[in-house]
Picture (cartoon, rainbow, N blue to C red):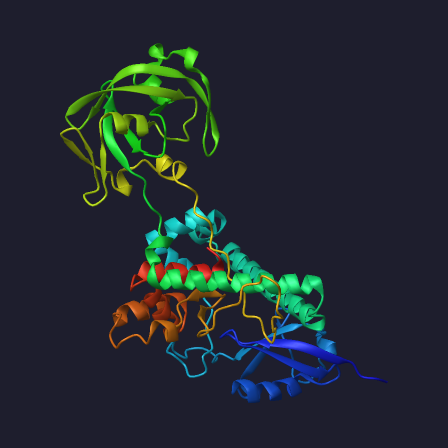
Length: 432
């Protein structure tokens, strides 16, 4: 009876992927013996996992459901309990459990706020006293990640089986482009990390017809706009001229109710005459000072002093805490969720494709568990001794269950900001 040859992949916690060709009737321990040579982890300490279950040593690969293209995971078995959370020599990473994750978010209000905005379902589970829902959510995410890794391994196998196929060439070109994008993002994380923060729009305090409002200063808007609700609140609805009704077009469309030809606008201690276009729904913004108003009064948007200069008045822009939450989120562009960058492609050699960009040569980027890129230590240079407070490093290691190297890499990427580093590590692992 002819034996079947299996072409399988095995990945490690540090993202190393290895390919093996074995007989389907070989026992699992034979594969572990090969892995001992490749990883340095002795057979007895290996934990070989496939399809969310550990494979027994004496069972055959085929009996465990392993087929050609299967992706297995190997790691060093964790000590029974009580083995401290130091930087063990094996490099095995201890995953964050539900209780540890719940404690982290409950003791970090900023991280909890971000979680509420990005993943309300997970935040609800964190705030619940029952850990079952949170445990189930984490298990579902881990299963989805394993499924994605398996799917990618199968796709890689298909590409390698017929690399001259036109569809395979297109797929290889796409992977090269994704790799270039990932490298570009890594450079931004290293040299321009502030680009990943949210920019707070420019608001000032003002009064319209003696009614206090928060005005959004927008030099990209052609007209000065007031919402119908704000016009009614200011007692100006009786002055709306419906002959000026229509549709406002820009990034989107909105219905123009009419126009208020002149009304008193107080900025600082000075009064200015202004006209308002009235919108039925202005996206949650009560008042928007457009280019017509800014040009008319020769306003200066002073970003060095964070103030608006209009006439003799110098009015400071509001900080984020002073902007109503409805306006803060409705008026700003939604932030895209960071997609998990593509995993490294093992033994996939791109063939020349006309017009395909070539990936730049350079050091391989370091990956936070789950694939989130951070600048390579080789590219950024080794962190000088004492570059980050030991308390910051230990805070990430103990609260998130990451290794010291991952904590230092994340801190380097975000200039020592512990909160941003923690957010990146969480996002890379759980997708928030």
